[in-house]
Length: 205
Image (cartoon, rainbow, N blue to C red; front, side, top):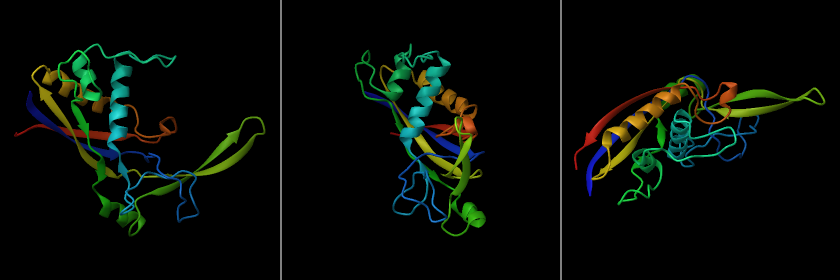
């Protein structure tokens, strides 16, 4: 039986440019080799819920030693945490407990004031060095620039057999770990650093 629903309101402020890949259809400023994902109806970038889900799950597994250098992936010790991301076979109700919504851009006007009307991204030029030939191959990456803010929510459904404190704490811990890691691609080159803020509240049902 579904007993309670909690909502974690998430706010991510970009401290460095963010790249989460979309379709590479070119860009109207000289063209880009890699484009960010955008809503096709208004061309505004967003952060897919699947990206948040995958990253938070990864960070929790790294923190608990459930991933190793050989790429082996071990299950969480606590099925309360497992059930946030996938079915937990030890639970009578095997429904996945957490719903990760897309995060939408909440300060469009600020970006437009800096970049121009209808613009929400930047193009970053990079050189990829061929170690054998010592030649540089330029490439251009589209990013959402530092200063952009994305907001959304994570919904947690609590059933009879669940430990709500363990589940909520796991998500909040992962959001804290995200600040010390990165979101999206090219994190080792400085992309995707975020400031995470969140507020957890019970939803009346």
